[in-house]
Amino acid sequence: MGSLGFSLSMIASLSPTLTDSRLVSSVGCISTIVAPSLSSISVVYSPVTKRRARNSGLRYSAASPSMETTADSDVSVVSPATSKKVLVPIGYGTEEIEAVVLVDVLRRAGAEVIVASVEQKLEVEASSGTKLLADVLISKCAEQVFDLVALPGGMPGAVRLRDCGILEKIMKRQVEDKRLYGAISMAPAITLLPWGLLTRKKTTGHPAFFGKLPTFWAVKTNIQISGELTTSRGPGTSFQFALSLVKQLFGESTAMSVQELLLLRDGYQNPKNEEFNSMDWSLNHTPRVLIPVANGSEGVEVVTIADVLRRAKVDVTVASVERSLRITASQSTKIITDKLIGEAAESSYDLLILPGGLAGSERLQKSIILKKLLKEQQETGRIYGATSTSSTVLRKHGLLKEKKTVVYPSDTDGPMNDQMIEGTEVVIDGNVITSLGLATVTNFSLAIVSKLFGYGRARSVSEGLVHEYRGNLTPF
Ligand SMILES: *[C@@H]1O[C@H](CO)[C@@H](O)[C@H](O)[C@H]1NC(C)=O
Ligand SMILES: *[C@@H]1O[C@H](CO)[C@@H](O)[C@H](O)[C@H]1NC(C)=O
Image 1 (cartoon, helix red, strand yellow):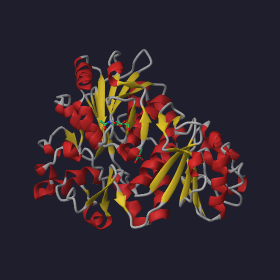
Image 2 (cartoon, helix red, strand yellow):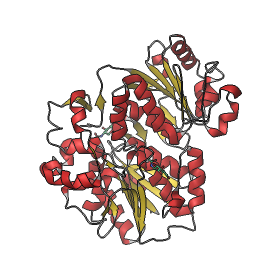
Image 3 (cartoon, helix red, strand yellow):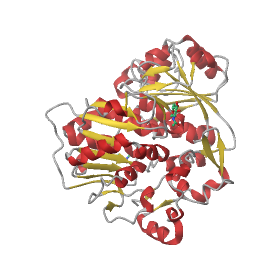
Image 4 (cartoon, protein in one colour):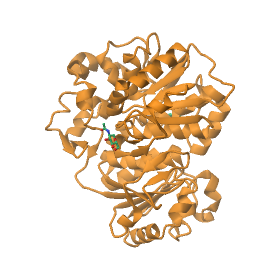
């Protein structure tokens, strides 16, 4: 039906009723919407009903509490009745999209997720180079009981997990006690198999490691549930994997609500990519990309854009606009950036990409150095872009004039712009690229790869991700 699923977080945070203190309860820095209010606010509307919604006062922004007032409240979390405890271990070379999507989606569903390092320290460099900060060392988890233990893949991450004796013990107890466990991409073959935890269980995994799975039990599906064990294929299937785990922990309706939050569409829907004023983005040197981030930036977006571009051999710098290299992204995902924005500003970049996230976008907007960098990018005709709420940053700095973009719920405080292309996931206009964000960010990143290097490179990167990319059926 081509309906646009707007993020609940965006809608909720713009709505005066929904940010009402009766509905939003704060737990530390994470606010949650209490369950009963959820059904009434999970709005997925088509372009047609959207216009109606705008006219009927659903154009929340009228009373818009500015981004400032919502900066600390993260309402993109569903709060189920039961509490569930989940362990996600990470190690050197863990696949960052798989790890962060698991953590992000499970936390959105209301689970208490503990990210534990199997290394000697909390800081862990992931497989494509993102530095993640774990909550605890694995030794702190040895005696705890988890409702779910879920293993991300990646190399050598899956080997690091396999070689961790404490984790092996936790997992074996998990299986003995018949509690849920899961593994994605390389983790089934490289981690669970040597521990003897795949015996007589149908299993899937990353295509490149499929041959290592026990022959008669290997199945080529994105998700395989075999009793307490759930397995999946790769970064491109990690939303499906995480949502399957949410469903098993909390039930179907929570999974559906979270799926809407993530802008994850059902297969039958067919969102478009569109390009206007087509321009050649190819370069005669390795493209250099700057991704400025702040506390509250969307963790999944930061990590996905960086990972996908690095897989395509782009030189990526993730720079913090905060005082410290360390930032706390959405859903409390802790990332150590490569540079502070001041240092990053000493170089110039072929592309400048702003990840979304309400609180993060607000903080990006306040950075004077970033504002200067963006102006330079515009004046020199270089490429820039934004996902979800960060379009606001570009717009407020005057960088979207005469540019066609995707439609953002967060932009409803401005006049409805003729330049917004409804029903699209990714829009390119000359040197500007925008996207809806969250689950659509893989396609956004692959569109960039396609524009820089051609469709072939985007295609091969998407194969490694186990993500279905049909860029050749669209303009890019
Ligand atoms: C941003 O997050 C970092 C890391 O958690 C923290 O140390 C810092 O105080 C935060 N900055 C602000 C302004 O909240
Ligand atoms: C990404 O693009 C593919 C096709 O190229 C499409 O099937 C998918 O629905 C798009 N969106 C997401 C969120 O993956």
